[in-house]
Length: 396
Image (cartoon, rainbow, N blue to C red; front, side, top):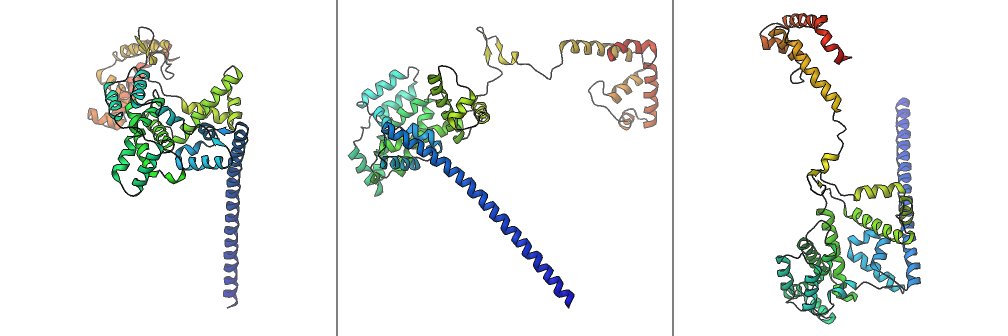
């Protein structure tokens, strides 16, 4: 009875120790997470403080300046607009928030379409037809946008379609800026239209923003995400695309300030990253190049012709191997046909695949021992000075 009590007490002590150990481990894990979270929060606070100082000095901030500090915000326009509102409540205007709208509304629809035709000399007929079609819908005033949004809120499908069609030129204006990034203009417009539809669904006119201003960011998000997903042979995640774009902007700014190409260390210091991380971002941003890319004015060569094949044998070695093979054939011709064939199968002289004694025996209909005897006799013949002398120079 006493032994049973002792065993129970021992089990209880071990159980309590195990529970205590798990609790301590959980506490350590929680503290580590809190430290990581605190570090992230400190970094975000530092970025916000830097933007606030810059905004107070300048009196305003552009959306691009805000996105440099918070690149992840580009993935969620609603969060971005909340950030805009926070800066405006601190007396810092987001000065260029309506730049896209101004560019799309420079004049009446004929002027806007004429600009499209002039700026895109390589424009094809489908794009011309599309521009002509969307030009038939008149632009909206701020009050008309509110009226349509009110009707949409009440479930009016016609108002939803009208608000969408009236802003299709805004999509073209934004999509134009992404030409040359691996997608055709029509594809960019189509992706931008999806962003516009999303903006129509999410727009809240009670917050006081013009719809065009709000839709701009949904359109940009849709276009940049499509470019990240579709334009590259090797897909780059959206967040990495934003980081690459930020690196390009920082590099260009440093180039203007320094008058030379900035080093990786200088870019890293400006972005708050390590030099190794900057090099990794640059490596990821590189586009793959086809080995079939034409080279030269005549384009009679391809890039692959100039890429070293490190696995290829050197020309002298290839020539020596060819001569050795010829000499080997000559030496084997001095053996009987059966001896020659046995050596070829056993040592893979024809196809590089060596056969076992049993496999060769089945091929000739003899035992393994008989194959071994034939092989031994053939090798003795090859070791004779009259034959081995012809191969010795290639084997040394």
